[in-house]
Length: 121
Image (cartoon, rainbow, N blue to C red; front, side, top):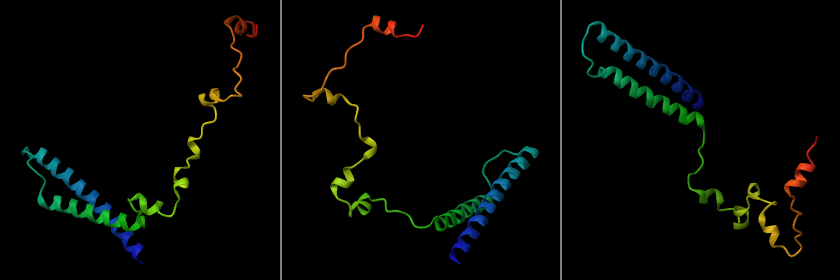
């Protein structure tokens, strides 16, 4: 039932926010037609916009559900250091370190002449 009220608050807040924007545009057009100088929005439009924003934020925050903790130690307290440091996406197998191995055999370097001979004609 609470989610229904949150969705209703969100929809009413969005509609009211659009209405406040439309009212502000109408006020601006009225000032142009009457050739008056624009100083500020009327108070009722500003208050409606602010209250609509707050109502929309309330609705969104309750629709979104539970949030995760910002502090990393809350999520990581049950993990060991080995698990935290394990990042499989950073594994690299074709790196220069293989040249330090005593069993490393250097590949035969190809001369430019060898490359020309292997080109298809």
